[in-house]
Length: 379
Image (cartoon, rainbow, N blue to C red; front, side):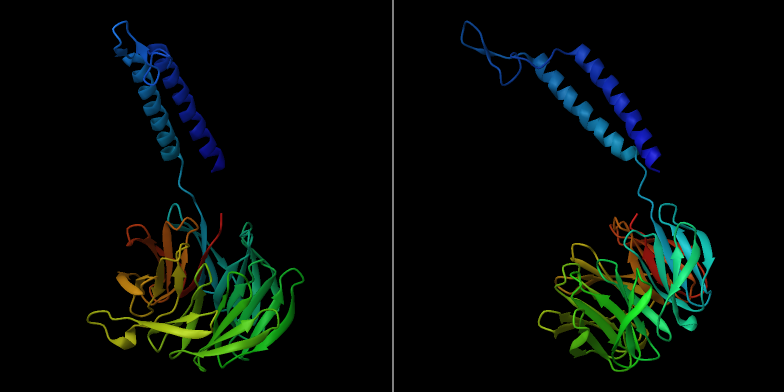
């Protein structure tokens, strides 16, 4: 793809040079006779050479056109997305330029939470029924090994430097810490009953785990590895996500039907967002995945069996719109350029593609059985 971009740019620039040569031959150079360089006549009238001005204007138009043509001729960024299929025991790979699945890879049993390392070369997979974190080489699409984990790993988060993986182990009420380079467990932290949601602050100092049965968000100091706050939220919290600047922590509660907004500095609950969809029962609205735009101005929340994604003004907390997607929308992921938002739809076995600029669903991509998690490679 880089070769195509280079060749396209070279061809356009060659055309620019030809156009400029033609204009330079057609019009005189910008000189003392042009606007800005007065030529005073004997009568004292400022006589200016219009042909010099025309050449300047024509050159600027041609340069602008060339630049526009160069960038419009470049192909869009293509990224790879990875989708975990919980009942398919597989990972589906998507091409986000063509908006289609390119391959399906068999992995361990019941894959759910997935995460990429910093350069996108490895995909870490929570294989819940194998009690392990599998490592997938994203170039060869082969499983190259596994990392130690407690029983039934469900979700994981990487430290900002990529050196440590934090895993929620649902069956033993622990968060497990794994050294990525050494491929060994380096500790565990007792948390509430049925831990699931995992998030880490942008500065790497605060780790968050949500416990589904205890109905709490546990705030953990990553240096001391101790819980520094337990914040009660609504029923069955499933996911947590920090704003990119770390100013807020949002926690979705599936049964409670709300998103709790927490001040991580003060370690207290600020407010809650609830959802109301006309002609739909409250029980069907079950918030799960949360994604923020980089500028922190907008949030997208997956609403489970409501089959919708809520678009929220993250500053005013006002719900702007509900987008109809596939059935039982679970987790979400932006492409790095934030052109698209991808949603894993667990019952319709597809991924919905949302055009972020227009806030419209533009395509549905079939994947494996019961898609659960989705991530997009950085390049």
